[in-house]
Image (cartoon, helix red, strand yellow):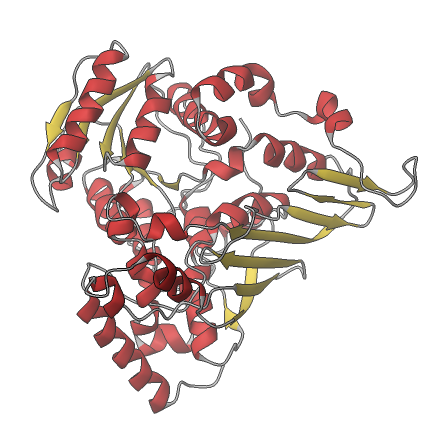
Length: 460
């Protein structure tokens, strides 16, 4: 790739300065160093005595002790899942708001667990949590800008850790998590619930049983009308809308990309080679503000949105497979993650789930997936699916994700995904911003696994 021009670097500096004026502990991807911008696939030096974390099993244990950082809406949702799982204990909770932490404590007591320790000690209270000796896994459900600081602190203190999405927003941070995980010999996981959806796990089995032939294309998305949430004066409205003033990028790539990366064996024999991104104008949040924010003195009227409403990226793997990845949270529309695959013998499309296999009765028309469930429903859903739907959020996928994490830790199995998957699924955030800043130029994808992507994924 050609070197960046002086104009590109000045633009990066200007964006960094504008972002700093907005406030918050974040670093825009475009403000990364010139080497990362010119060569995003550059692999930095590995930690001393580096060894891969791929297929590394957890230490076997009778019970798993969790520390939760962030007890807002998502943190309490995760807490609810864990409290319903045998062998999971929540030993400590941490938040900057005492009332939210207190609500989490009441949930533990109501579930019959001992009251967890409570840490309410400002922005960096999590540093007390990760230093404790009664925590095996640190789960962070904080605003995005705090995911990386919490997990780096956990790894430095010898704790396994996991995060809501995205796990990081810059290549620097993603590499820092990879290096810290390898150095600590502890897992750092992106807790991607969509990988555990009933349909996603069904399709993954069908793909790998060859129902669709050789799969060569997939489509992923996060198209979700979040306008009312973004403009709330509480919870995510206090921080998430600000990202739309900071960067023009695909801000939330992982819900769609995680499952299709499993379908395509990314980091299990293949890897992403490059990404190209385009984005339309930013219109939706301005229109929603005009319609709903009647107080013209509100600080919301001082905000300048820069994130293109509809971002479309094309990813290509080194073996030649392709993925279309989209993002739009700023406009009215029904929810979809696309979740589509195309192979040499047939195709699957979600929302609603439907399938076509060449030669099926009825010719070229979509069929429901129900008839495939008897053979291809994943064993986890067959075993605890009914409980998951009763106890878990998002149709049960949240419960399955938490259940599987506890299961792998108690039985001493490798996790289903690892730090390399975490970094890969979040990388389109900074890479799409870089591509857009370069006029939709192709941006090479880092190999976060440093070559380990060629080996198969462990199955448990």
